[in-house]
Image 1 (cartoon, rainbow, N blue to C red):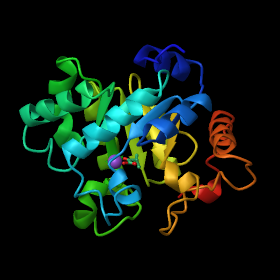
Image 2 (spheres, rainbow, N blue to C red):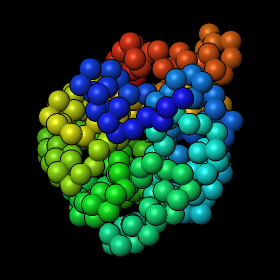
Image 3 (cartoon, rainbow, N blue to C red):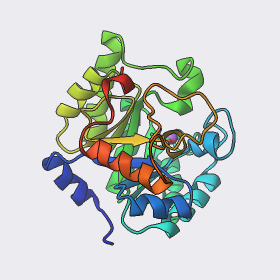
Length: 265
Ligand code: KIV
Ligand code: NA
């Protein structure tokens, strides 16, 4: 199996083919996701919730992220691997972000992800110029849950929607090759995605018009005991195995049947 590259994602976007992404935290699931044809695996700091049993992503450390990134990297060859920079490991300065990103890249990541809008553009540029691909993340940014007042939809007012459009432009100009849009109105994500030239949008609770989709693995396999968000579909429903559920996810994203309007805002 040939490893996917940013070049391949550019070709997929040009061809109108959706990018499939799931979170992943260990080697066994990485192998299953690869087998099922998932294009990209996100070693998300959601591991704080679904692996560690924390109530937020804030306690996750860089060492935790490096450990799970190495576990995933040993389990697969083809998927594009994105590792989250955890809370407190990048917000201080571009230099701090570079030191932290280097740890994740050495552990096997191909790209790092960081949360935040236009104010993170300087950091994004600093990393990209030094050879580290960056995925941005705007909308509901879980590391800011206490500032945002909970896990709620973002970009509902005209001002906040315009802010998200400005953020995406600044991050794209700074060189971010991907951006996660979490819990924003489908119409806004559609407008934002259509305006992109070099940056692929990956939605979670952002409607069907993004360039790709991501879900938390434990949510879509229905093995997380917590309350499920509106945007999650249980792909184990009607599937005879975990691999079948993963295949069903890939197929549903590729053919545009997931997400449906019932999963969107
Ligand atoms: O950590 C995570 O799982 C994420 C996704 C929800 C995008 O950041
Ligand atoms: Na995350």
